[in-house]
Length: 271
Image (cartoon, rainbow, N blue to C red; front, side):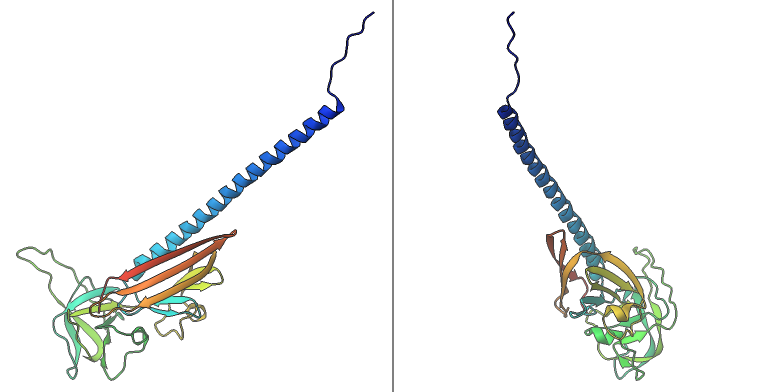
């Protein structure tokens, strides 16, 4: 009886198949791992960019409405601070030294509140934070009480009327504004980098001891961004013919990804 020849794989063929499958598996694994790495890096970079866009846009919106020349920086504590404008007005007549007065007539954007400070020709950030001198000769005055103001519709027959702004003491202003303009402010706002996190401070007193996280901790503290490697703030103060310019630089770092953001903020107001 004739026997049929049995068919199958030889040991060499099986070994070769295993080796080929292993090579293919390693190649596919490397491709998949590379794809995952690209996805992770892209996701990390997008998250850093989103954080950077959020914080630069937030600071831009706040800084552009700061009191002129109120921005100051402490490079050693990585802090930037400014005074947000709470109101603006045009004044009719100014009690310019040696004249003194405990009030003045102004046409504001809206009403004033008690303890608002008003400044004419702000030129120095530190002076805006100091106590108002009892001599009454200054560029700053404090509002004595709330002042309501309801602007009328500007038609051919009606115009907004001026209001009397009372001060807490008789004041003699040192200088006059070419545009007869004053700015009102109350409390500062600051951003500080602590470790790799950026915090926003508000609600602290004008009389804070220094521009540092420790001195600002008595106010409100909000986390604005994290994973920040370094920050840099540069200030070009405003003059009569030039707006103030603030340069912001953030370097974000996470998972070996680094993103640098440079942003310029033009302060819209001049003294």
